[in-house]
Length: 361
Ligand SMILES: Nc1ncnc2c1ncn2[C@@H]1O[C@H](COP(=O)(O)OP(=O)(O)O)[C@@H](O)[C@H]1O
Ligand SMILES: [Mg+2]
Image 1 (tube, rainbow, N blue to C red):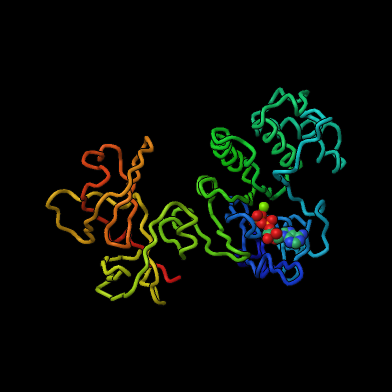
Image 2: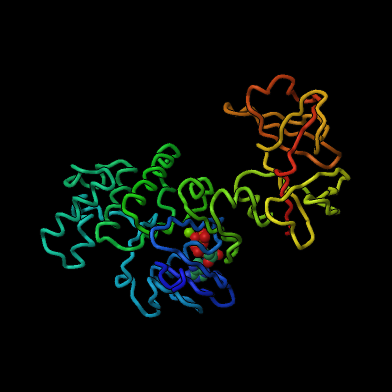
């Protein structure tokens, strides 16, 4: 058996069109049991549509959706054994927390004892013991979202689908809930498919991130690999911050590449993966990989420039350096390097060849 056979969710060339508008274009995806996968992409790229097809609220125009190996064509949502936490999937306001969480268990016609036990366990998982008799309006935003989570996990679905569940919460709560969600997922060993447009959220929680752009998968992989080796300018730009510099010419050296930028500057790149086969069009440099060179330092990729802009962000400083007439590089420097970093000062920057990522598109 291949991993796809035993996967909790398997999408095969799934496409969804509205008239001539192709919203999801031949997406294939395998989600093994117990994995936390995020589908990450900008608004309108087709994330919710993809999730709705897995849930059964929408049918694919073509392609196949398998859940635990079973083709789901014609299987209604309530028969898919999937839990849902959607941003607009509000709690029932006239029901208590306990009644909300019991809802799915009642629908499944569980016995009274099973319902009580299920509610107790679900509330314990989300740290809401003792809240059974409260009404939603008596809860904070975070508690409401945890109740929605408890309601979804109480019937013990094999898979939980979450669509931007934290986007209505303020930043502090969102950050706390990220950690909590990940801990809950691990404690339950449940498969999570998590949709978000927030790259930090996806990076912080996921075993694997699937980056979507205009209905297709732009890249998928572990968060660290996607960050360090973006496959395209879109991914480099969408995930984290990056300098994207246009490359005019590429010369292969011994395991390295010499990139001549459009403005004439040259950079040595040492790609982590093998050298790209296609023509290099751009290179990506993360601002935190741009350093100030020590006086008299000699190394590869030294660039001289003048500081154009400095923004002190407390934890670090963002500095924009004009290294040629038409090339500005953004550096993220630790606060202790602030001395001599003023607008108009001349500085020398150093970039390690490993931090220069060639991109073919
Ligand atoms: N029922 C529909 N009819 C026509 N177009 C739709 C429908 N649902 C979604 N779309 C379009 O599909 C695209 C993707 O939508 P959606 O999956 O909601 O994106 P996301 O969740 O990534 O923001 C959007 O351009 C949206 O306008
Ligand atoms: Mg959406």
